[in-house]
Picture 1: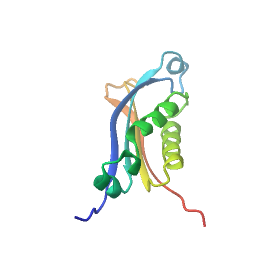
Picture 2: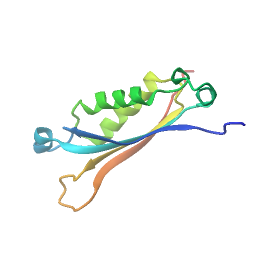
Picture 3: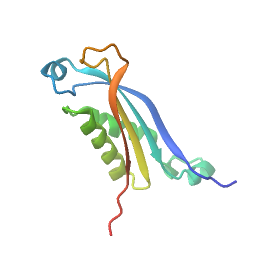
Picture 4: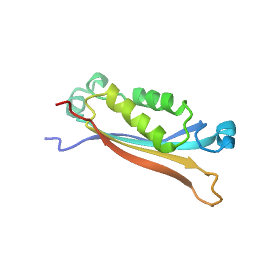
Length: 126
């Protein structure tokens, strides 16, 4: 068997955090959902059944939680910090897709949420 491609996903990570431009958002906070998709070769872990041969998604969750704990004006900034934290800590991740959605955003609309999705890849030093 030959592995063609592989991804590690964390879906529906829920947080209450204090991001937003409005003072009220910084005071009472809001609920957020974060999704990640890490492009990483899991061939060795698939064969070994050893967590040391992959990216431990529990550790990825901790990295996301750390970034969500730091208030920011924009979800774009939060998503960028999450992506950077993942790429810095796990160089074997070729690229990462990060989605941060603010549930019930204060914009006068009846909607599930508003957010941003970033697709970021490792940069190679020349």
